[in-house]
Length: 238
Image (cartoon, rainbow, N blue to C red; front, side, top):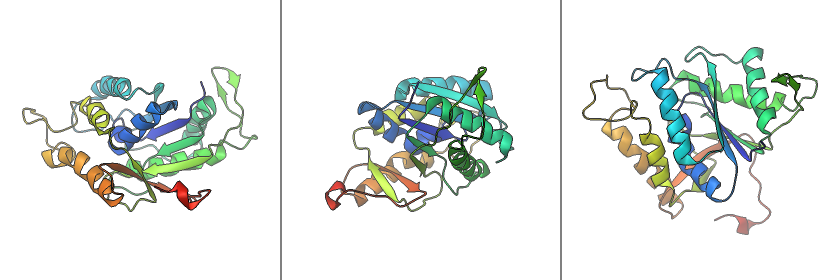
């Protein structure tokens, strides 16, 4: 299956938190979108890897993505080396996306910046035909995405562009609430984590609202880029 957009996250819920509304919007426009999680989030303080597997599957249904896969890298300990790059390359060549979106280039969790660089490097290497890969016993052809974008996570990085996601925040929030083990629940007996507070839950809306305010819209999600953005004319900007 060829996808228009392939989104990578170091952990299940990274994608939904950071660009869930953008994904929902692109799907509404007829784009084929997939998610690849690098780890199962097995080091997470709350819940378990098995629970996160179920939650991620439910979140994928809510968003309406075409595929979701998990590479089962070691949470907290995966590195940017040849072995890990080759697994990412296999996914890129399998789904041949025009656009790849991945973790924030700099963030609080060490897996986020590391996952960002790992996926970015793999996107380049995936276009080199002398790197040979096989999937299910079949050789793969080289493929390099046209564009690589990075979503914004815990840190308030300055975006290079924002997507107007007005009308799609409800779907984003619903997909996040599929991760019942991870987010704020006043009745939970699990330890409190930075993302399991009421303030963090509220921030999902108020951070998107603040970006929306800056573009005279209701809600927006921000991204950073690896090269200059280009438009055909000034009228392409909204």
